Length: 224
Ligand code: UTP
Image (tube, rainbow, N blue to C red; front, side, top):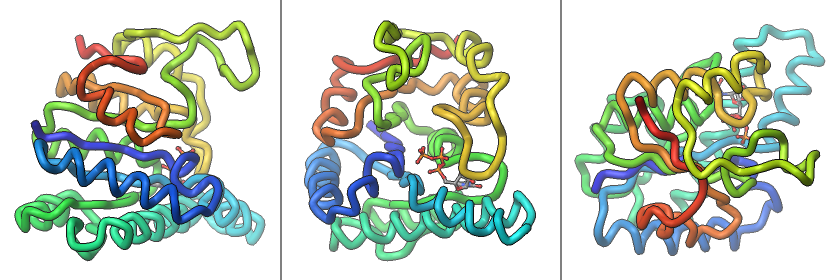
């Protein structure tokens, strides 16, 4: 199967711990034995810190986004470092480069592409571009909830959600650099238009990626 994995910065760079990168590299290597895997890495708090400094300096939202993209690419380089020979040694800056690099047979790891969306959108566009059969979104919660589970203990997780339901849920969210909330609208639109099977999982444990392939975990976004 061809699989695109998006790893939130909130997961992989949260503790600035090399062991997280190693743990992800081990699981991704395991997956690579049976599947073609392409990875997109997010920026996390590091990206938001850099964006805040740029915004404080009075620069445009597009440049703030661009600085966020640089951080996602730096995180991608760390994962490439952890994957050693199993990864293509350079970070693609766009989708045609990703496709070109994937022809090497090595795992492709990228960050952001252009301003005005998050790496969730990059993951969905990459999945569309390479014709992936599955998109896995590794995030900091177990799946998609009816409200923020970090704030509301009575939040309920959806096992399945349609793209239209998601569009309704996220339509009022911010579209500013560093604040593309939980799942950005561009990503939902792409998943919908190309009917990409997508699973949102908790990425704290990288082994959840394997469970997502088996369909045993998280929230499945049902394309309609
Ligand atoms: P993230 O994808 O990590 O954004 O990219 P996020 O959703 O805010 O953070 P997570 O999911 O908690 O990690 C960091 C920032 O980089 C810019 C955006 O400003 C984004 O908020 N970015 C990233 C882009 O503008 N374009 C891209 O393709 C990727």
